[in-house]
Length: 447
Image (cartoon, rainbow, N blue to C red; front, side):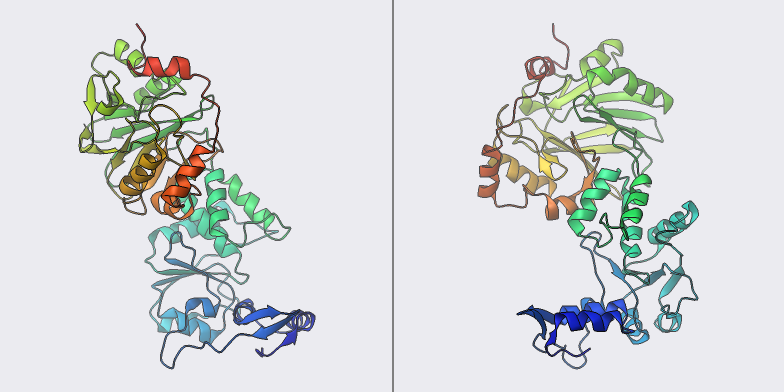
């Protein structure tokens, strides 16, 4: 526990044979630096008398997403007492009789405490145990602490809640866990079983997704076309049954219409985020069969439609309305549709993808314009806004504005670096471009 130089192998042996908690070991390692094969104490950077000790010094991690939940392993009673006043709620993932559970210190600080056993390998959480933890994370106030004896299962509990709360596929959860560098997200014998258990709890990309619960009376479905990796969205007003269909694919027309009928919805508009180059919209075909349905597309696209829309317009269906945001760059006519609420939802087409963006090498593409569109129109939306893209090619289904602002490898670069990267992609053209673009310029129906 000293901070002077100790040979590394002796230090390791001491910890293996000591009674130090995992939090104490982390604190010591945080203060130490490896120098010439040993550990040397860093300069004394203890906070001034009366100042709050940073939570990281007490062995706590605070992942940037969601940003208001701390993760920790075993703590001494005095460390729990030091932390308790900073949190409104505390979820303990071991049993209440565990020696590292310091209830008295938490109650003294007026913290809301929930004991929700969440076992790890070889015994995995039951469905009831998993649901209890997710429910606690859903209802308890923030900031909140998650604690377990190892400091590993807390990451699994947080990721499970995020995935269930937002409706992530396993692949979307995978990319978030990797970007957050959650400690349990490995394939080692200790953590790998928990990782695989969690992935098995989440849906695949091609499973219809209903999205998170909302208070605004939204009926929502997300669908995936495996041939073109295109997402299609059904949005309906529960009170009036009016609905819109976003970016439908011609070959999936019957699926989409059957879903609308099953949900008891009346289709009002077919809307496209832009004139697509990789698939033909079903808008024109639906309109032929159902003349009461109107098609919509951006005025700037130059495409024909019943209604041409632009920045500032609203697409109203029942008691709900999508706000139209102009987000050109992939094409001149790209739009993002934003539905305000808790959480908000942004249907970004090809402007913003999950950890990526649409190409800019054809159809009036301009990397600088796209960069400004995303940063100026999408990244300025509330951070918790759910991002629903036009495509994904890696099994993912959605993201958030905060995630993309932090982790998108293209759009976190400077504008100059982004333009250089986009110019060097050298991607092949979409296989259906010669048929799709002319057809989509006339709502998907060629004369």
